[in-house]
Length: 190
Length: 226
Image (cartoon, chains in turn yellow, orange):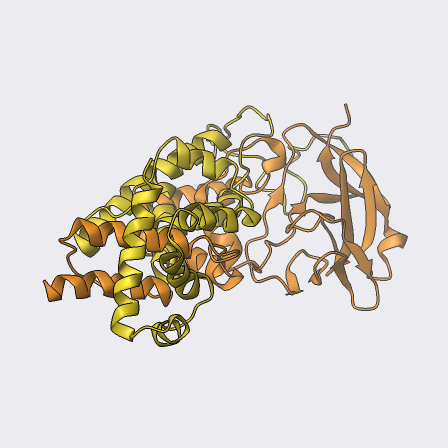
């Protein structure tokens, strides 16, 4: 027997090696992906978290994450490096989220920032940061406004329970919630 | 006025209920601000922004389903080329992988075992005919590769010995005639198909390794030792 891997006499070995031109070498520097599966697995949670932070609900976050992957899969080759893939995903997410708001409410309620949100994809903030982010929004508010948002958003109370807890009517609680959100948004502006 | 307020409130209530934002038009910039704050607050609960494993799977299925619907002739001929050429596998060998692999591996994991063909390989003896006689998977290791070889219908069949999920080294389970992953309750048949798996995402089948008989030895085509 010889050592020739091309030996055509071997049964079941007809498909020796790739066809010419089908093989593409790329730099093996640990910063590339081996497959689409890997691109997906490596980025799906990061991307979903980023999009959730822009839309605040699961159904839309799932739809938009799907949309970003679909839009990105065509142009992206798996030979792209990890930073290239992430940058492309963020740019795609920017377009997808902008389109979503235009169609849904006619206003861009939130936007994807190419620099900050690329940072988010590369190093997603730990979940333990969440209370800090909430506090940044809530801390500047006067007590009763902060309380209504805590009850509704952090403790998941209904508007009725919230009104009861705060000793006001439901209509009042609604108004207070709306004002509190506006104040939080104003306080969060740089 | 009343109508506008209601649309803004609806959107905020959707966020509170984890529902999709309802279709409509937000006229008042105050409503836009309030909704933005609601979204930020909602995303600031620990774990709120983490997708369930079902969601990760669902998204993947939808991405794949759409891809299959495209069915461009080009995509198919390219895939056929890749599979026929035997390149479809090996990230190991620094070969670009077509997205067809992404599509085929998770949805039909049992049918599309890839073949591991090293760019720079050599035939090395990995087992003797006697070692395979019992029909149990026989583990072999070369300096670059671990694998299992079995005799099936009179021909030697070899597969890679690392789980395709996260790379844990598989263990031969002679009683069950399968290869068990010690990490996540996953087992492969000796020819590389997934027998069962606790994972939501079905792992890909094990890559096949070329084998041949050489006298009383079974040889595998493995990466050359440098």
